Amino acid sequence: MTNETPMDGWGVLAEAAEMARRGEPFALATVVWRQGPSSSQQGSRAIITAAGELRGWIGGACAEPSVIREAQRVIATGEAKLLLLGSPEQFASAGQFASTGQAGSAGKADGAVPDGMLVIPISCSSEGALEVYIEAVVPVPHLVVVGRSPMAHTLAGLAQTLGWRAELIDGPDFSNADAGEHSMVVVASQGHNDEGLLERAIAARPAYVGLVGSRKRGAAVLGYLADRGVPQDQLDRVRVPAGLDLGRTTHQEIAVAILAELVQLRASGGLAGAVAARPGDAHAATTGKAGRTKRHTTRSQAADASDPVCGMTVPVGPDSAQLEQGGVTYYFCGVGCRQAFESDPGAYVKKLMTTRARHDADQE
Image (cartoon, rainbow, N blue to C red):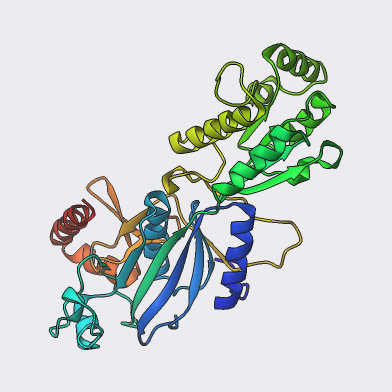
């Protein structure tokens, strides 16, 4: 975590809009209820990337690891989650569900936690609690069609019909800055500087790059680029000819064949960097443009663990309180829990295993 001032709620929304424009998948977490004392406020927001980077503010060290972990799961599955960070007793005592008037179990007068909500026990010294809603944001695909032929116009129009962000750019106006790692680029220049345009497209490192033309023409273009020193592994990624093989077809049908190939690749997870048809195909995003104002960020560790004493989710890392017992390293939210564990490790290990089994059952 840095010492920079974190973005406020509106700043998070502006950043989310920019990330969506760039085609980066992420999750948006919003605090919808809190019980003080808590460092978070109702309406606090944060962005969590697929790589586990948090931008904004959702709470302190007690809340962040759990929110990051569950947000990554939301990105992977596409299913939104409502988290209750604390204990059911806290929500019941606060009357959170006792008078909501919601249908079903959410309207129970006994304060029971509604079905479908995920309760994550945390044990903070502040004794605060949070309710956090997490939703996946998967931007629309970005297609760049290079050329001015009737087929190029048809392809761009069909992609827009699917709700994609499609750009039609004439060859002389195209540069590698017009595409990014999440883009799909189709060069349809009809022999007008195919070599130069394809070289620019490859330099953008898009998730997909295809050339409209015959196999013979494609082999000549790729051979020329190989002689110019374009790495072979990048040339191997070029689809020539672009689109599904439908035999001799009209320009409208060629456009359909190309779009069908893109849809098929996205659905199967065959586009390594593009926004996936299923959120589970999403990949980590880049950090953004140089020169942008610095942001508050929190990087997740390679893994997290549950404190065997209090049940809190804690990051696994060299700075965490830890203790090795029986060849296993246990991690704690603080020195107090570590000391409690040392007094009776067997009891706490048993408690930890029971909690994990219950959590795994809830996820099934």
